[in-house]
Length: 360
Ligand code: SF4
Image (cartoon, rainbow, N blue to C red):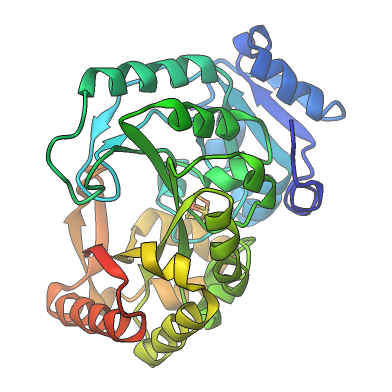
């Protein structure tokens, strides 16, 4: 496989691999185990429930160390494909869950207890086959949707950062190759990491990458271990030239004193940082922060500074998340609705022609 050694070395120093017993029966499983020959191997019954990791409260203080040093390998059991109505028409089965980056607002972490390192799934052939069968049954897209006017769009990265997963194995390369060959479908994923090894994946316009952006001033505190925002903007033209469709995800939008001035600066940076070709195909999604009391408690043990930005109970209220069904905190509607409007107006004025796919 091809990897960007520097990026992988910076993010990962794997010393322990928890793995389900069947992992070594899969070529992808063996390839990943071979990549980290020095790592201690711990066999576990289920990738999802590892008491030493997920229920070990002492690990909350070591949140980042665990992400750097631990890898979980498993076999993805459920290969269902769920409908979606926002960034995609469908949500594909995950090829990974968990992440080596450490954004304290990450909703994947909310479900993992006290640790959330990468769990990579080794049965990639079954995942690829399930998506291929599903796309085959859809036929041609006859009516446009918010996700795309012409092609069925499959979201790949709901439980991980796909560009980081690509440091671990060729799972992502295989998925990009699948969509290159599907006549009626394209892939999409949001990312906060610039993995230049993916520039040679040859997606031929059938993978839409969405760089997530927030003002650098708060990104320094909140986007822990990610690529700098400026590097993501610089990469837009490069990934477009490499055959990706490249959009942006303004997410999560955080409210604080002076927030709109910082977003104005971010949008100006975006407008100045991309060429005409990128501008011509650019779309954005705008997603305001949701948070969660349990994750707040975990974050207070390893990154209390982040919670000064994320935890604003006087501005937040409970709601049921549309996709996960979880109870989460969002900004109170009377605060959020005008903020959504202001931000969209600012984006439209600063980056003219950038369609806003949805904002909430
Ligand atoms: S990059 Fe995405 S998946 Fe990774 S920690 Fe951040 S929000 Fe979570």
